Amino acid sequence: MRLRGLLLNNGFLIFLALTIGIATGISYKPKESTYLLLGTIMALSVTKIDFERMKAKGKNSLIVPVILVFGYSPLMTLIPAYLLIKNPDFLKGFILMAIVPSAISLIAFTKILEGDVELALSGTASVYFASIFLMPLMGKLLLGRSVSALSLLQSIVLLVIIPFLVSRAFVRMKIDERLGEGKKYLTNILFFILVLNIVGARRSAFFIGPYLIIAISTVCIVKTSVAGTIIYLISKRFGVSEEDSRAYVLFGAFKNGGLAVALSVALFNPAVAIPAAISVVFDMLSMSYYSLLFRAYSKNSSK
Image (cartoon, rainbow, N blue to C red; front, side, top):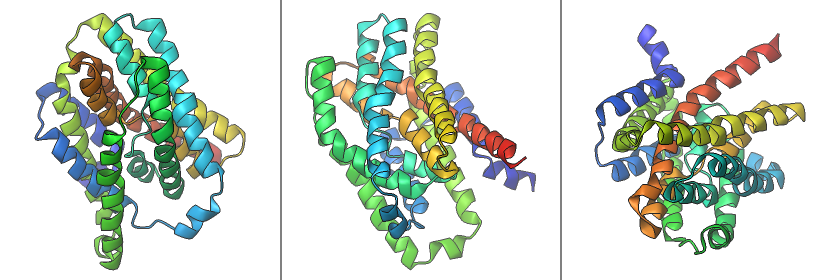
């Protein structure tokens, strides 16, 4: 019974995966396995998508995510970065993180955190469409060069289109009815392996000196936990539903770290990828934080 409870506690599983990953550096084909694991989680997460409800979401589900991803999030990333980071390579790394779109995985994360998956899906579609135009423009303005959309297209195909098609096959197989409660256990176990593999592959990023670690970590905390908390509190203040608020939080806090790492190496050098590599760890860790925050707020609201 206790083991079942732990398997349903995604906060505990994320913390455990982070601890093991940093301590051991365990990882297996991180790029390929990340696509496979995240794609599977995505396919399981969108089996219950309600397309009529997606249409009913209206313009806010398309416009607000784009503003959060390419307006709000860059400000919450670059302001602390310019204040705390003096190393030019690491500054470039944070600029790349600011201009990439939101993490495609936030659709799966929204499901795990019990947010509005339809909003996450429609918002992600609008963000990636807008990124075709905004990424090269922001890259030119902030870095003096444009950003290729090839990696972006690859991410969309492997992490959105293919998993979505697989999810339709899962629906025909009635996977939700067949797995029942086991679907939650399976999703959380896959997520544990995903976090462990990502963190283990980037373990070396934590050994660059105490000041740089503290400075980079501070920026990462601001761009994930602080930025998302502000969105959540403002959303609740203006009467946004709990499910929508949780999805908006992830749009404002989660960037496509994998794409940022790939662009860092392609456009500059491996050192530029260090902020994105460390940020991925804080993204995963903030999932535990948001799980606690949402649960605490829901309990207070119900009193």
